[in-house]
Length: 192
Image 1 (tube, rainbow, N blue to C red):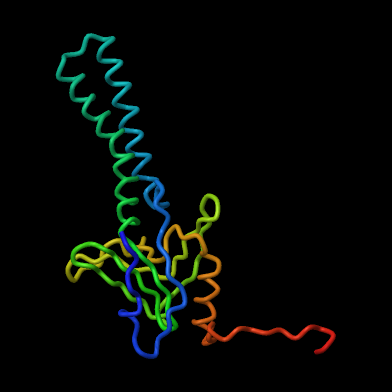
Image 2 (image 1 turned 90 degrees about the horizontal axis):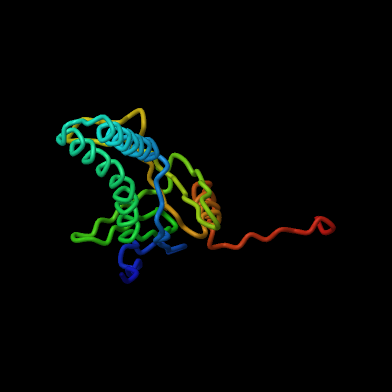
């Protein structure tokens, strides 16, 4: 999948500071661990029930039913990993002098734009190696007019990027009103 032409999304007084895309590896989101633990628990209970059913002479329908529960439990784990990986494959990120943008490359393309002033957090989560996620907005999920999951909002940001610390510094400078395009010069102590 080719990288988009970000200049066409920028306004005339906006400059492009950074572009990137998430790593394409197989990972879990941190908020999906409970789902995965339930899936693993289903699989283990299913295996134990099958073993007990076969050893105890249980009817065939019992063994088949718990076989289905076991397969369902074990298949949920790679399915969740694939679902998250697929989402990252079609995502591209950009940071401009005014906003953070997330582009989802699927038909039709979706562009999410977050003005720097409206970002309510700048949390950098370290992952394995040099990967990190920069989370900059919390948003409650909505269905129609009704907000759901307001206690556990949906985290929005640049996920699994290689230069998260640099992007975090750029966003901090922007939110403080500084222009990161102007290089900062420090005066050595002996001249101050």
